[in-house]
Each structure stands twice: as C-alpha cells, then as structure tokens.
Length: 204
Image 1: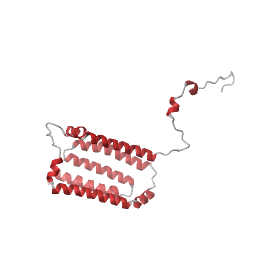
Image 2: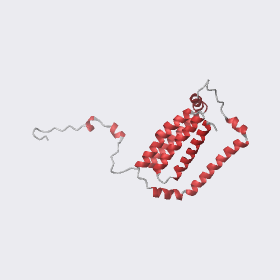
Image 3: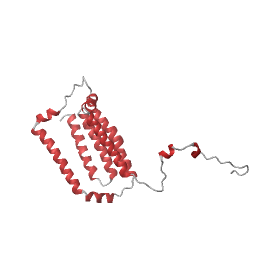
Image 4: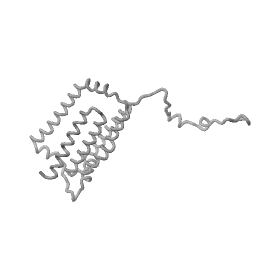
C-alpha cells in the first residue's frame, strides 16, 4: 500500500466516523465540532485528488465561516433541545421518506455508471493538461463559462433562502423603537431642530 492510499483510507475513515458522530452526538456543540472535523478530512481527500482549490475553499468557506457561525449560534441561543427532539420525532416518517428517495437516487446514479460506463464518458468535460490550464482556471471556465446560468440560478436560490430565513425569524415587538426611513428622509430643519429662547437667569 502506497503512502497516498494510506492517507486516503485515513482521511476517509475519519470523515465517515465524524459524519456519523454529527448526527449521533447528544450535545449540539459537539456535533458542530465533529462537522468541522468532517470538513477538514474532506479537504484532505480533495488534496489527494489534486483539487487543491476546492480543498482551500472548503477550509476557508465552510470551516472558517459556516461551521464557526453554526458553533456561535448553537452556543449563544437558548434552544429548547427537548422540544426540538420531540418535533424531530414527530416528523421522523417524512424524514425517512426523504432519506429513502435520496438513497434511491444515489443507487440509480452509481448503478447506472456501473452498468453503462459509456454514459459517464459522454457527460464528462475534457480535462485540459496542467501545462495549458491550471486546476483553478479549468474550474473557473466550467463555472463561469459552460454553466454560468446554473451558477447564477444557484445564487438566486440561496438569496431567496436567506430572505425566507430572515422573514421566518423576524419578530416584531411593541416596546422596541424602529427606524422609519421615509420619515427620516422627509425631515426638515424646522422639524429636526427646536430653538428654545431661555430668559436670563432661567437656564439650568
């Protein structure tokens, strides 16, 4: 067994074990830490395959931003995990159905590639030589040239999801003062400044 194969099995085993611990750990903080460990090992697998750009993006974006944000949110919010688990148990049949559908899709994809190898070769993009195009340049060509519309649609979907999350979590409270932009823009010096003439000896 070569050194590269040894590191592959090491990264793969730790990634699968930590991914299992993400969903099985009772403490949500531990789940986020195991998620960070999963991302780090996945980045190691990307490095072994020569996709160094994807490995760095995985570390910078997911480990450095998303997972750390999850960790702060879990640690700072007072979440009732007992009620959360009760709700998860109530929706377990729907979740099981979704899991079965996803597993069936994976079986179809893997089984189709095994039964018909020429189908996989037909949909592959030609890989340029490293002397002509680097890995990052080739990835940029695919994202921003061949599949630019799908890339923009994915960004639009994420933007709509972000707006939906803000709308669902927004709570209006009566005892909090809020800004009214139109009222602020319509202010004049007469309404913004009040001149009070104080007689001599009456000032504070």
